Image (cartoon, rainbow, N blue to C red; front, side, top):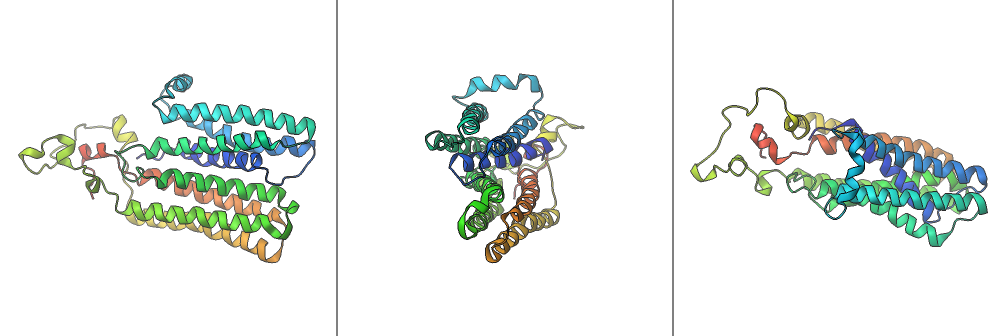
Amino acid sequence: MHPAISVIFFTVTSGAGFGLIAMIGAGMPLPGGLLSAFLIPALAGGMAIAGLVASTFHLGRPERAWRAFSQWRSSWLSREGVLAVTTLVLFAIYTLIWMVTGERLFWLGLPLAICALLTVYTTAMIYAQLKTVPHWHTGLTPLSYLAFSLACGLVLAGSLGGHLQPGSLAARLSFFAILIAWLVKYLWWKRAHGASLSAFGSTMETATGLGAIGKVRLLERPHTGENYLTREMVHVIGRKHASKLRTIAVFLGAGLPLLIAFGVWILSASTVWLVFAFVSLMAGLFVERWLFFAEAEHAVSLYYGGRED
C-alpha cells in the first residue's frame, strides 16, 4: 500500500492526542491552576485535531469529508468521525469545567477516556477489517494502535505531571507501557511475516478467475501508465530496506524511550526528561507506521504482477 504522509501523520498524531485525552479523563495526576487547565487540554486536543485534519488531505474531495458521518452503520471511517467529534465535545465540556471550578470530574472523565480509546479503536478497524490486506486483517492491529496510543498518552502525561506522583511512578508506568506496546508490535510483525496473499487464498488464479484452466502468469500489465490502483494499492519495498527501517523504528521508538524512562525511574530524576522519551517514541512511530502501510500488500496488486508469497 502507498504510505501517504497525511495518513501516517493522522494515525500517529491523533493516536497520541487521544491517548493523552484518555489519560486526562482517567484522572492521571496533572498540575493544577487555570493555565495548566488550559494548556494541557490544548496540547491533547491540538494533536488529535491536527491528525484528523491531516487525514482529509488524503481524500479526493476533502470538502466532502462531512458526508462520511452519515454512513456510521456500515463504515468504520464514519464511526471514527462520529466518535472523534463526540470525544472532542465531551473534552471541551470537561476542560471548561476544569478551568472554571479547578476540578476534574471523574464521572465525566471516565466516559471521556472510553470515547477517546474507542476512537483509536475505530481508526485501527478501518485497516483491520480489510480481508484483502492480510497484514492488517488481525485483532493485533487495533491492539497495537491502542497500546501505542496509551503509551504515548502515558509518557506525555507523566512528563507533565509526574512530579505529583511518589516514587517515580510516572517513569515506571511509562517504561512498562512502552515495553508492552512494542511487545504487541513484535507479535504483529511475527504474524505479518507469514501473512502472505497466497496464505490467505489470494493468487493470480483467484484474482483473474482463470484458475480452472491452469496456472496463470502475467503477460502484460493492464495499463501502460499509472492509475489510482497502482498509486494507492501497489507499493513495493525491498526486504533489506524494510529490515533497516524496522531497526530504526525499534531504536527510536523503543530503545531510547525505554532507556530514558528507566533512567528517570532508577535515578528518581525529574520527569521532565520523559519529554525526550515522548519525542523519540513519536519519531519511532512515524517510521513504524510508514512500514505499516509500505509493507502491506493488497490483493489487487496481483493484477499488476505483485508477489503472492
